[in-house]
Length: 439
Image 1 (cartoon, rainbow, N blue to C red):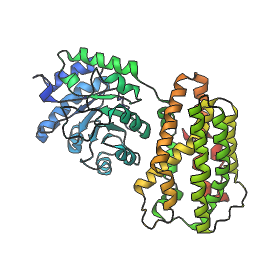
Image 2: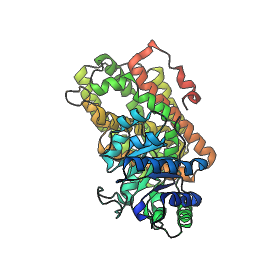
Image 3: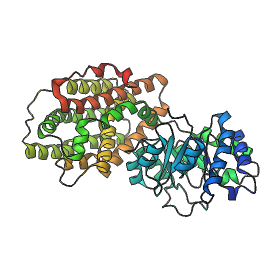
Image 4: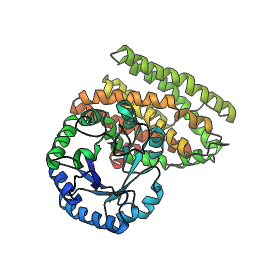
């Protein structure tokens, strides 16, 4: 089992910036001030020295329960029995690092652009380091800085916990945490501080005061078991490699036709709950795209495969639509949007996942994959996520509990929808009645 960790204040060591003080002193003082996780970064140290330093720091951190992460070097992490590693885009591939370290160790991954995040979303990494947020003299070999707006978009797009890297200090910490980022990775602002414990404590205070607990991140974490099960479905695996049978795909599309008609009405009803003109127009645009973009794609596929669409709704389809309508009928826009959200968010993340893993050449389902993984759809979903997080932050506890329920139940119906497409009535879908077992 992987160790629990808190990304809030992530110290990255640098002996050259430590004003002649030992790493042991720097880390000890940083822990006193409130550092929550420590990465040992040694680009030039001989392997033996690197391992010895790691062992010393582990002894310092162990009583406080603070994880020790090794930068780049999986061999050093193994030798010192560190809690994990942090790898960059040019380091060892994630799959190799996981195979060597096993499932109990933490693995963080640096991402340098939105495409890196989409790829990271297909991996079981424990967190991503968004790098660099700002330009910094401690790392000159980095990509174009994300900036605050880029960071906000990156946080929304990632399904993993996030930490901002590059230019993190007392002047930038508050703005960075306001984006919903899970924490800041600090080098010089701690290592070069005259009073390390005091500087660390001040940074921790800024982080905690400006931390934004995003409902979307919380509910996604609660739904991890459901989402993992979705990605593991035979339907999506076979669609990704182009081996899904015409019969199964046709059965799925026929049910999706029924769902799509309901989707248009649901989005229209949702728009009526909105208070501003901009919000109303956004959901009407989603309704329109469903009736134009998705319907055009459906019509093409129906014609291509000769799919019979005059079918009865399956129990899964009927129950899913009833669940969404029930959420909208509460008249609470937070709950209503939570009920509708999985049909946008999960479809988009699945589309992006398949887009980054599928064989698109000669894939008969290429049009479907491209529809849900495209940039326009992704940007629309991210806009909705920002909206729902803003609303959730102002909602009372009872409303947030209802948001969780309607989102998670709808996410489970998403799983069941693909499951029924593959197996039809040859199995039971009573698992949709027992949400707690999936959390």
